[in-house]
Length: 363
Image (cartoon, rainbow, N blue to C red; front, side, top):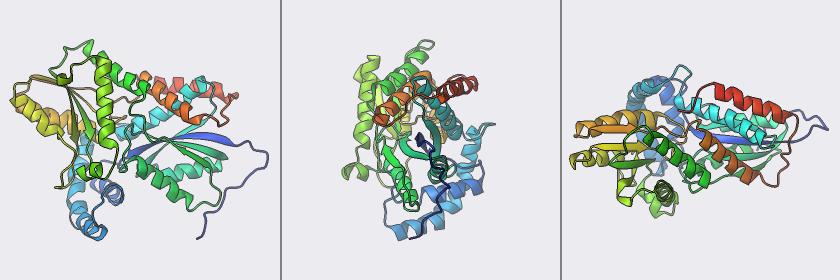
């Protein structure tokens, strides 16, 4: 095995610690070619699709990548912003804010972001960090609930990069924070802020990203962790159990996925006489195609068309102060034992936070 050339090392340069936020990924543009490149990488991941490899590759390249990119590109175009993909915009902002919040707590660490699929890739950011003499990296997937399809896939990307590198930094991985008190408090704040200006709904629907049911049968903790997040949020809000529902969205293929499914559930609620629903997506920490288009456009239309009267989508945590505070708490917990003492750069990190805040108020 050949290794990638090592960056020049200057003796006496102090080693550094970094936090790397990792999100799922996004096409570079809302166009069919860009979406095709993105889907080809995403749907080729053995963690994401676990059916026999040869059969799946025939389906992927023979059918899906010929039909789906053009349809998905139109959906991406409906949520694209002047700054680019919403997922990328929010992830970048979260990294900038987290750097400032950690700096204010006295932790002089480098904070970067990367995408599991597409750009900016995990491997390319690890290359940059290594060139900056970073020798300790905390990997923080932006998935509160653990799943082999997401969290474990981030670890795969880190290990794949490591196979090409002769000198490896120390790595730590955050696997889950679905029950972290700060995370739950941030979710609750998002809900109560909305209720402060709007009438309470008949139902609060929590829509998590779906995964095939077989993952649950094979021991994946994702389903249980989604339910625990929902239970803790309901307790924090003081909601009766019958007013809060957990559903799962974004199915792919004909196999059974975790149920109940989000859109059919919303249609059924409307047909049963439920007039007002609030819908939020606790498993997504940044608004993206699945929340802005699938939920706030498609599911909204389905509920209203079925007889519902009021559909309120509650945005993801995005750059919310309580969320970045929680994220900083998770990072600090896992940085324990590593030297992250304050340096003169701390002031610069705090200033970085203020500049990021100036980019826009919390959604």
